[in-house]
Image (cartoon, rainbow, N blue to C red; front, side, top):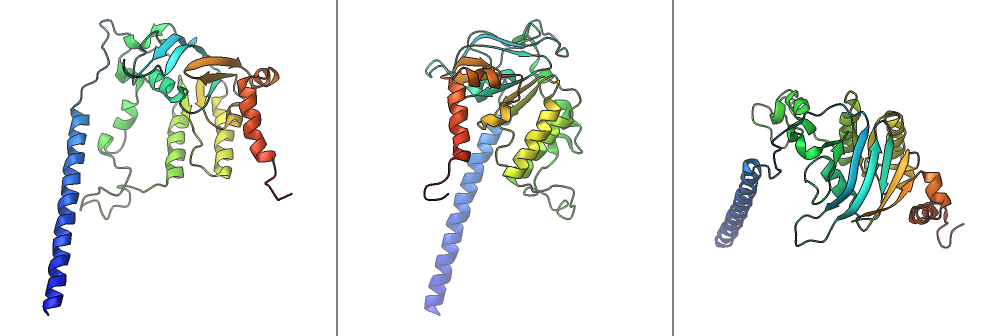
Length: 279
């Protein structure tokens, strides 16, 4: 009985310590949550805001430089890029070359350190941030911003409601996110950042086939490490070290023996080359 009592006390103490650690972790996360929801935007507000007009000419990035702060190196260095209205542009390059950073600037999560981003000639810094983002879509959900896309945080009254929340796999989340973008009526700009990441080979083929149909005649920017995904784009822009080093169609870049051609050939050879010791 004594040994059993000691074991029981020990188990209870372990449980108490574990619960205290979990509570401490929860308090720390809640503090971070409060910091985020109470944080104000650090983007400057234009004194003369301009409404967002439907895209007619295109989006220009003239001599764009960016770094996250003065102590960090430049992520983008003098990028000159034009995305014509109704055309698709593929942005390719190695990891860390600045592709995702460029997307953040297009969405105005940050402003360029030097240069500007122009929507039909209008500087994005003069456009209200709310006009660039998807607030009306979220507000139209059954519970607005309170709509749950998971069943982890359901309350007692929602537990029996099968429609209150669903659990999706990573690949399903990817496809839902793509569907949201494709179902939007006449988007001025589609930004597709690694749209097939996390999908199996069959799903990836299906997604890119559908994307080719939806991108036709629309303004779009595609980012993918799978270079074959962007070969049918109207133009391919190659970033290296934060600089735009090459631009042209797939055929033009391949014929020129460029860095893009080297990377494309290297990636394609991985599918064609037989494994060692096998036919």
